[in-house]
Length: 622
Image (cartoon, rainbow, N blue to C red; front, side):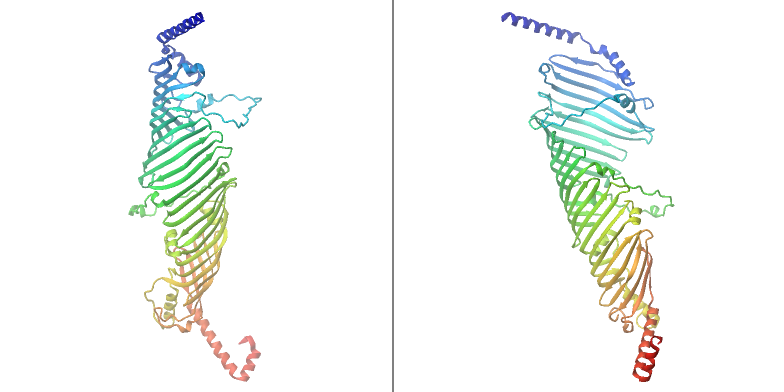
């Protein structure tokens, strides 16, 4: 036994001596020409190593190299495609004999990777073509059978002490457009990485485009649970600060806080809980993504306040120069969006917002339910409270056809119409409590396609309000005074017509909205009729009848009792922005005079028996 131990000791001593001799005498720099030659044969690119190649074999295997450059593709700038200032790797030697990998550290510093494009060709194309393996017609690809056995994420005994990246820059350039985007990892550290061990992650990243500059800070604690093959990043935090001309108001900040986990067996990534904040506005909830043939996304988000208006650029007052109309130029038709990508995702989630401000709208208790299934995006239900009333909406976008189809069903009940219309159209068109319901469907999502192709129907009802922009009683009074010389002519009066009820239904087809049964009631007058509005032509054509049900006396003018119950034609036509309004009071009064004469004649005829008999014989002739 003693002899065996002596022999083993001698062998180990000899091996150690060999290692020492190799380490002392071996010079890897002698192999630079061979390495560069092989790289050029394999890629067609020139590899240069300006610095020394360092090699250590014991007690750990260490490798380092400085000043590495890989030339660019032919036809591109002469600057190297890849530059590396220095890189080093250190691996423990003895654990390798037992099949374990213990990496002390990996360091990468001063890296620049330039991805360039010119005339539709990338400086990566030649490398990608050489790296594509030849495919044989008779080659059979055998896919691995799914297994219920949980496979470990890391090999047994794997250990990575640290990874350090410094000044790692990725540059993307379009040489034709002369634009450049850069992403720079200024400093990033991670480690240790091993099963059931917590490692710290910290990165600072800078990015820039011609319009935007951004800084991103990432931190968290990484752990890998060996028993369940779960990767976790606890206390993940991603902070973003972006500035630039294309960012609303010039600056934006965002913060993501989450507990991240990735379950290898189910290919499931989840952020739960998830906290989001952007420019001081916060949302909380969760998010999950299951990587399958069709990715499955699930989420729930909730917020107390979202003010979209604050996230949009502030409107700039128009200068005198900008106010001048620009010379007309032919406009290209809008392109229909391609929603076929909806086929590639399965999504379901909800968004709840206690207070939402958007495009001057104030919305409370918003519930938005979203789904994407089989290429169709649905928002149903969408529930909210606004301006004292309720909103219930459902919508479907069909991405399985091109152009995409849509369906929309909306109910708005008991809202204050004046602030709602003011927020939507920046006009005070109507006031009162309003309820509107409609259903629409069509194909095509460009503005022109919607105007021309939407079809549907609906109805509306407003109570105890006013139509602004026209004062029908004042119009009647002024016209009456002009024709008869009685009463007051034009006097100052608010341009609005009060009502107790305003109702109607409408149909939409071929870009035309028809309203066959408009009815407006008030203690003073009754208005009814029909009309149409062209969405494409933006023209109105309404033919209405106005009947006074009470005297205008006390309404800012003298009595008009002789017009009571007379139906007066009212025609509204022309451009929506500035319609023409005409009141045909003269013909209405003429009809009334004829009616009064007919009534008096009838009374005279009825008073005389002989004349009454003659009247009966003449019948309708009279």
